[in-house]
Image 1: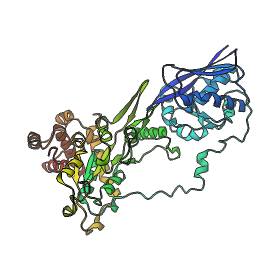
Image 2 (image 1 turned 135 degrees about the vertical axis):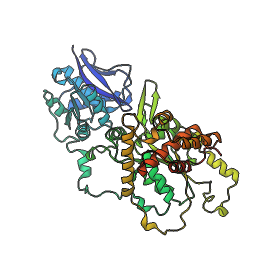
Image 3 (image 1 turned 180 degrees about the vertical axis):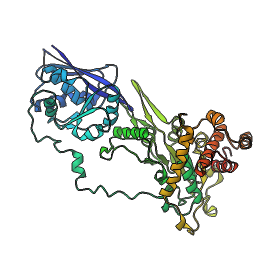
Image 4 (image 1 turned 135 degrees about the horizontal axis):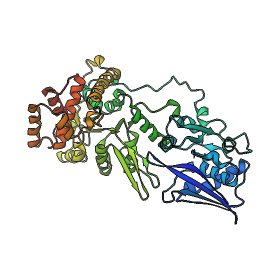
Length: 515
């Protein structure tokens, strides 16, 4: 008896962990046993592997087959273990020379006819393999483009298990009419014009609302969170949905993280390369905590906060969201990541997004627009706005009330997203130069200590903020956020440091922290 070993991959969040797949074929009653804490989807690989191997010309069910997934204490999930289990089994049977399989990662699902099917999470899996020193990966043909986005590692792809056997020195027989002879993506894209894209949202569509447009520019330039209050039809959703159009392209590391998240979610299109544009995620107000933060019974999946990484998370009709959903955002807004704990591990996903909340001033929405038509009592208005708790609102740098648009005069002079984006990119470049080597990227991330030591305001301006704290207009967190916004206003103006006018504007955009 001999034991064959090949490499598989288990994902926890974006972190990949190498799994050693061991197989031993021994005498005894025919059986196929998988141990090493597999979940139900991995445990079901037994039937897929037996059928796939038989359709490649090598039956493996006539003896006792024992497969161990090591380390045995770690939970294994997903159908991506099908291929490494099959390869280890064939190597233990002597079909494949074990020496050819060294430092090779196998990740793919098997169909009953032996075809290799794609699995989600290939990009983070190959990234983890490259960091672990693996020299070569074998994936399904439909996952090949995604795997090749990782430099420095050899990628082999196959459509059938027989191709894998032949490619590693064995002999196989299989039907050439395999299920995935033609990659599914090629069939789906055939006849489509790649030059035809959906019409992009542009700030030219926003008529009026000069203050709202300026606040959106400040939010984009400094990465600030924002609250928009106003009656229905004031343009809150229009402004929020166009915020990604003025954000700069994602930097390389963030683009890689967002692409890996999309890969885990199963909606990554490798033909377009890494995701470079900032995402816009707008969940419905009936969404659960698990759908917003992330979760799941086995491996915790990324939620809306992670899918918005590097972009915008927009909560329209924010007071209608469940209080638990809103309160679950507190820690994420501070740390920029979310850690989902399970019995046997922790899945950590990046979640550095810009939060934009939109809300009506009262349940009927007419309090600001048509006060004479509003039938809400003062108690109803207070209760409605109290659904946005103080700790959540306190974490929002910009809090703006939008009045209804009464006239369209001057609408022809509105700026396009391209013009605004140019100023935003210039402000971001100024921040990159100033914050180089500090560990910060945008002004919204700056800590109070860093602002005190490295970026203090003029003494007179600091005194204004101190008095605002003493009078209860600002909290200490609010003071730091006003200073961050002041620096962003200075960056947009091309100034070396904030002036009194920038501090005053930042105070106005912040509003009062206490009623």
